[in-house]
Amino acid sequence: MLILIGDLIIPASLILLTWKENLVRDNYTGLANRSPALFAAIALLCFGGLLWELGKIGLRRWPKKYWRKQILAETALILAAALMPYPKAENFWSGLHVLLGYSAFVYLNILLWQLGWDRPVLRGFYLAALGICLSLCILAMSVTGLAETVYACMTSILLVQLDLSTQP
Image 1 (cartoon, rainbow, N blue to C red):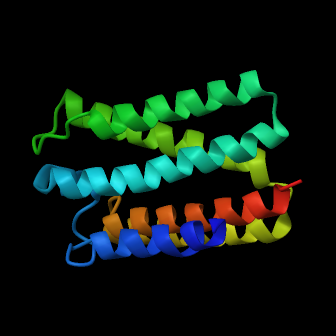
Image 2 (cartoon, rainbow, N blue to C red):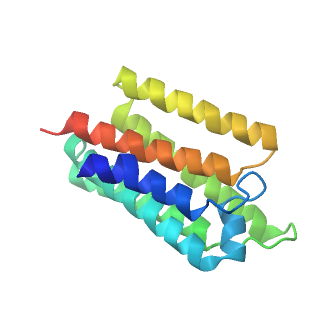
């Protein structure tokens, strides 16, 4: 069931939710400004599943008190970035939104590193997918919805494989 959800349902849902969107021009923040309901569906699907899996896997490797603090910190960063308005005009709020978004991204990657860096197969998959996302962002000269979708799908698949490889 876990494989079905993480390897198929979440990636397929993300692709279906954004099928008619221009993911090279817009990122998820652009979708939030245009279609709050679509963004809410994507956010619940991605972040809910991500945080659930991260919490479950981390509790197998780290003390409960330590890992819960890590998950709460990541949840706070994700919520702050998602709820921070991003007006069209460059101002303090748009800069803060970008800062919080990058902070959540970097912290998530630190957590992923803590959980699975010791597994060479997962590490190779992770680095390849991260390289693809970075290339997409560099080519577009901004964070694109396509890069965010690839990253979300990669993270979902990676967490399922990590979960399966760490089950007692």
